[in-house]
Image (cartoon, rainbow, N blue to C red; front, side):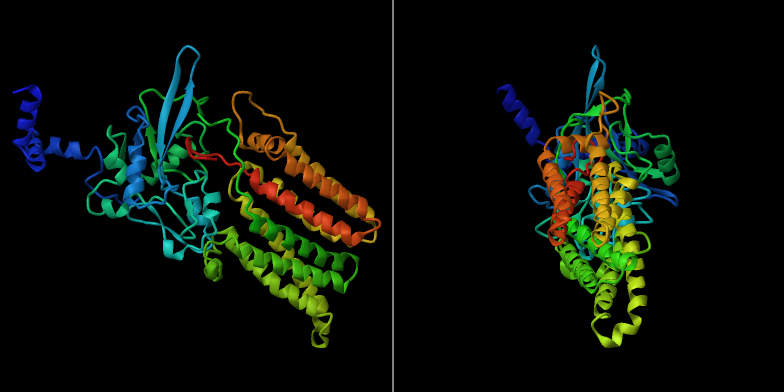
Length: 495
């Protein structure tokens, strides 16, 4: 018999079950046997103040993507849908370069941004296990959780019209089975550990995570990355310098511009005297904008649920306030044409303007709250406030006010475009946004400037044409707001 024949014959003597049984009995003691199985999942349940967490041994990760394939297969994901990603970090020195593959999925954070931002409460954090679960039947497909998660973990399914994400294979863990990615890893680079939430917060405050990744203080991720050769803080992801245009979110861009334009037209009636035409135009802009926003939802018939998350979600608060504004603005417009409403016209107008300004603040905070640098603070508040003032200034007796506000807004936008990198070896999110605006998005920015110039040139002779040009320019600007809205991410996840 040849060697191959002998090996085949020997293998046929025992079934797979028998071979496992023999291996199982070969452990010298139950304690040794338990330690073997504990290398993948813990045998005990988390106690109070503890939760499950992924633990990744970077020294063992080879980047084979067996974990990606197993997750995709077990969860029945769509062709382009992935809940686990594998990326690469580059670091070291010229004399000792280093390449490190990194596997990542949902980090089941101690303070999950997806849960806090969801307007319909479609997320829950299991108190017993710490697993952050997505409730598919509650989701309306607004995708705000994708913007709120600094790791862009939730994935939107166009076919289903909802967002989905990793739940650590909770049903498998519940019966003592390892999650698909853990079980599939040939080198046991991924495992499940029990970690205290106090330790999660401590690690986040000490920035113990991965280089070139989002600040762990944002959501307190639970995943533990370990290596016998710690990565340098100067390590960067392999796609660090890639420039990827983001989604335009056209329905949201239209909603933001039209609602702010409508608020501006209502504000003009307070500042420069009541003009029924402006009141009607304002109400029309606001309500058309609200209708357009529904087109962004994957499940538009469930839009009524958006008020459920008002306690924690700024998106929910924005929807409630702007929804109320839609009704009040119609009452304001009707108040100057329906005799029964005339006595209440002034009070209704004041209520509408107050509600509208609050809505603009809520809109700005929706994007500020994502933590993306390009949308933080005055970068969102300034844009939205100036758009509102621009349409209020259009109704002013002095055309210089309109020209001044529009010029200030162009200067405001150009500051980001002209931004230069602060560190030659590393880009931050603002640098990437600026490079996008100077590169792939430059033509759109020039079109935006052209519309603004046309509005300024025509305001003296054709005010109606000027507001059309201004509106077109603002729509371009708001589209760029989303397309250049780059966020930090985990290595390997497309920007």
